[in-house]
Image 1 (cartoon, rainbow, N blue to C red):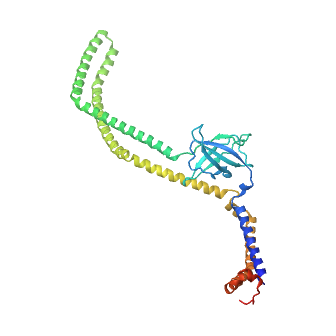
Image 2: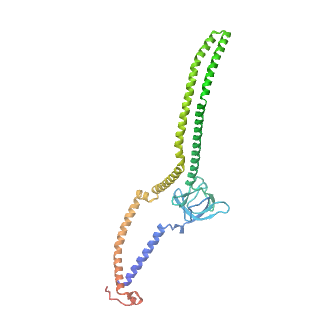
Image 3: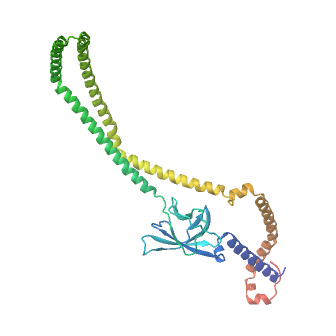
Length: 353
């Protein structure tokens, strides 16, 4: 093999490697935008935090375009986003664009499928739905919990005051209650005398018997009244004790309400992040055109990989002489560097290493 053949083979190898690299870039480098046709759709958002030119636009999880430009709208408060949608992807009139954010701060736009028979025309401006802000929801929850705890604490304090007032009232009016009971007994006796006189006046034996029964039951009713008052007093004392115990329980809870809400906020944020990541991971696993689904269900992919591995093995065997020739060429250049110049092209060589 002379030097010209070696140079020819090296040049051919470089050209083949360059063509292979260009093919790989075109196949896997997302360069289809160079020849695909797109149309523009304008989306109005109140807040477009996380969006930037190049952010993905999806419909049902499938990429249908990207964000081309963001600019402030002087007529309306908010941000106007210009989308570049693939020409073969049609958006229905009732499709709703929604801004979604990840835990890392990146954002994308997802369109709902829609059911309308009409499609969005190029250049149409539509309103977008903002992403659900978890911090706002937790802030509202915190304010409501704080108000509820304050109201509960105030109610407990009022019940404690009511119990104290009832207890003090019973203790203060104990003598008056006894006097009232004695006066009631005297009144009942006077009432008995009056009824006797009335019975004598009326002269009805049945009425007399009924009145006698009622008068006989009055002492028992007085005893029941006394027992009832004692039971009410004991109930009031127990209520006061329960209110004190309730106050002891609610006071630490009110003091730690802010810490509990913060922990709840952190837990909800972590849970939301984990659920979002699991959702994305499950979507990636169950996509029909995904890698895992293809590996699991497409036998042609396995055969192609097997054939590619066999072809690669053959290519490596064929490249072995080229590597040896390059090693010889490098050795010659190291021994006779003058062969690299113009003179080396016309001057012969001994051919020895």
